[in-house]
Length: 248
Ligand code: 6GU
Image (tube, rainbow, N blue to C red; front, side, top):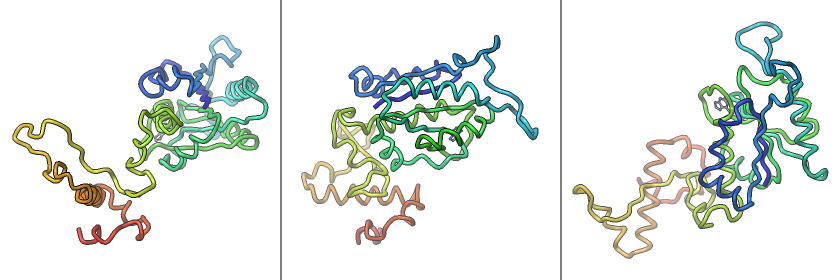
């Protein structure tokens, strides 16, 4: 997968060179290119923003540098593949594991994180006529810019690419993953030593009884989800809950 990011703070994206995403790049599984939006300005001050039409607080990102940037990026790739544009914005649709899975199947993503009050609407409207465009929010709070959201979305997508996670089974029990624990949060995990500060691990985990262990994990996941995310249980398919869950 190729990922391009256009930003006025390229250094904000340096974490993409670290850890899972960094290793995927080093292995050639991911090709990440970060671009400074100001390279597509032509005035002495490299202006990227201006006052909003209609008045109001803050500044709006000018359309011309974005148009030049996106055209240049498109032209730098193979003509037979269109990028998918991902626009981080608090007014976007919620970013979910489902969208992460959908994006992980695309060959080419272009992120357009904005500062100030956002990008002139005409940019998104113009590219939506040529490319698939997703306006995405990472949660119900407001960040100063979209760069941190790019880090979040890229990490969620990159770990789904074939061969990026060491153990393919690591996806299976993820909170929010489809499958046996569908729609439930993951419960607690333990490792050695068996007693730490007078706290013993749950006995069942060393019982050697795999059926009981699975049952216990399922109960823990259900209890945790009921306590922290009752909305997940209310909106899940009743068939996804087993009869034991209802008894808890
Ligand atoms: Cl994607 N951008 C900004 N600026 N704030 C956010 C966000 C994105 N998602 C939640 N808050």
